[in-house]
Length: 464
Ligand SMILES: Nc1ncnc2c1ncn2[C@@H]1O[C@H](COP(=O)(O)OP(=O)(O)OP(=O)(O)O)[C@@H](O)[C@H]1O
Image (cartoon, rainbow, N blue to C red; front, side, top):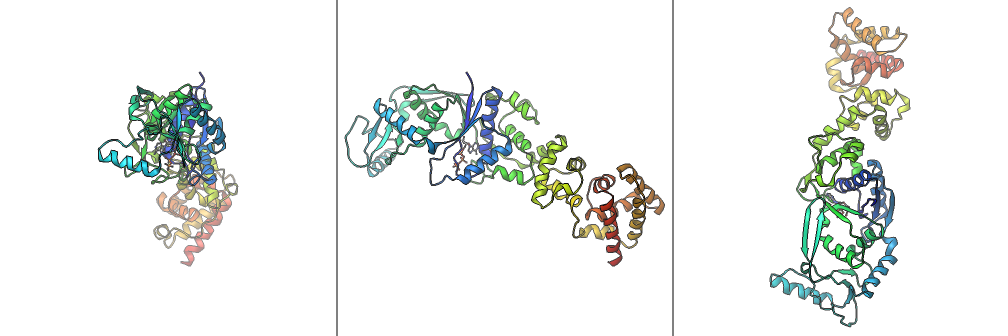
């Protein structure tokens, strides 16, 4: 059997980390088994759905690299098919028209609540009452027996049919309801494994009964736990969730976020770092936690730093270039980005830090950092800088080793310790007191920018 999984978000906002992790599990399962991963947009809530949200979800999935093999399929394009299935259920006696009015149903509910009973439809129209006025279609849920779900994450779940009432599958205007559309889609799309958040677990017995009535092959279910916000409530678009794209904006690599997400609900021994290929090879739904987890930014930052340090610098550079672009910098105007990544990766935990702290390689800074000036641009420092300028000017091959030697020789000549020379030089060329090793910084900056900036610092000191 070829495995087919799906991710089925409602386009009522962006993709957040809760949805993204559920999508990741579904994607990993399909990839691991050489199956297909389907994207289905559940856009039947016309008031809350928007094309903008669809685009935001697609953008999030693309950035994370969760590429889908089929879709996106839109439920709003499938209304004829849902109507057809509703009619089929009516024709075969597995559904019926219900004429009960809202007032009648409200009264029933109140009665049941007063009697401390679980509110449920009493099946009044189940046996074919002819009525007038508005009518909905209800599914005729079996009254006997039970539904058994062997959930790959939660284990066996058994629900007695008498606990389930006859749910509405078509509203009075004929539009299908959520459980009906999901069932028809999972059936038509040949979904073999429904991997979704456990906020849907209560829908599952009802969906199974409809699938059985339609004679469909039942999928395997895996209800994965929720990701909670700091307040302990489930992250949702309507409640505190941050868009996946915000993590890009905040300087995370997509694979670091994926690694964080996969570990948030799943483990493989005590391994923390997983390449995408390892995730695919090792992922097992049976090892997914049952309990919910809370997002922890500190661990994500740690992981991000690991990825920044160990990934191919060219790959990190590709993502860094987006951040520089956001800051109005075109990386072709300076040193090769991959070399900047190599120089900065030990120090920078996010690409935002790396971009901010690499701007001076690409454009002249407007002001010096005040504290750095106070500490390093004292009277007489212009002479040190002047000496450095002359020595650098004389260098024919601009490379780190020779530059390092110049700084050493100058310190010796001025009878100063190295820091007293290197640090003013750093402030002169970077505008601040922090950068990679000074020889690496200068070699990346190039001769022209180095000399210009030293000259500029000399006049700044003289004029202060
Ligand atoms: N906090 C969460 N943790 C894990 N999975 C989640 C979370 N929120 C949603 N999901 C799962 O993501 C998938 C898509 O969900 P959906 O688009 O309905 O997101 P949502 O944030 O719950 O939306 P809404 O704000 O409309 O409730 C579903 O399988 C759902 O169970």
